[in-house]
Image (cartoon, rainbow, N blue to C red; front, side):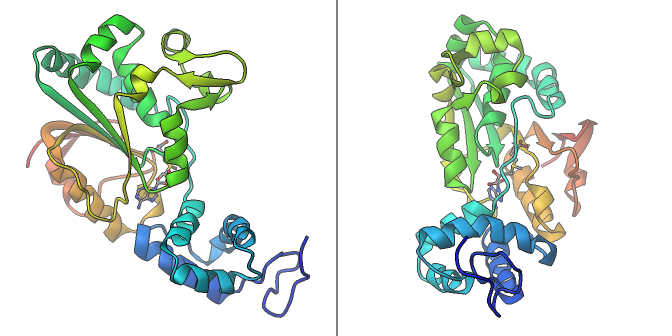
Length: 288
Ligand SMILES: C[S@@+](CC[C@H](N)C(=O)[O-])C[C@H]1O[C@@H](n2cnc3c(N)ncnc32)[C@H](O)[C@@H]1O
């Protein structure tokens, strides 16, 4: 451990001084930039996640780090990255993919086969398990049929604000344990390699456009989507942020398109009127 606790770091055992004022400054910055709420109860979590950054910058207190990120946008992005919670898994809340497979995919795959366009969006995709799951579940294990469809006008956009998880997603390399929740036939069809580190087939990887995107910022996105997964990110936002985001997501969906949200999330702020709740946290857009 480094320097002992000082008057500025009342918590014994902390390597770097970190005060309640520091915490509030950080949480205001994070809220303003990405909408994530970090109330006072999250002070220890914030310290635990920022301490490696303070160390990497060669500083001796969080207050100094706050000054440093004030005029260093790159380091500020690293701080925000460190403060995001990226928990995810393959086939998480798999009822959404079952719903998509029966409700949407038969007509969408027919549209693709006839030369039409299909667009899906995994918004807040974390390290990629969600978009890869979505593709595997929709395509099944028939690689030849999958190749035919993916060669058509198909794109799955997968976005997140965290650069580090996007790098993992783009690489498509996961531990055997991480891939254990992928059903056997799909694992055989789409996962390559031996040993503990395995790779998702490049055919799937190349069908996904992984892009950095702050859900609170501008969306350089043209056109509408046939389905959007925006799951387990709104839990970090307050009600006005959720309402604004959901209304923007609804604007980006085709009528007849599906919005899937996380198990503890719900539609708020009046956007419910534009959707029909057709399954567990599964919403069909019924009006513009
Ligand atoms: C808990 S993960 C959820 C991943 C996946 N959707 C799932 O349900 O398994 C939340 C993700 O939201 C991302 N996130 C948080 N705030 C964001 C924002 N303002 N814009 C874009 N992504 C954000 C985080 O970086 C993180 O990867």
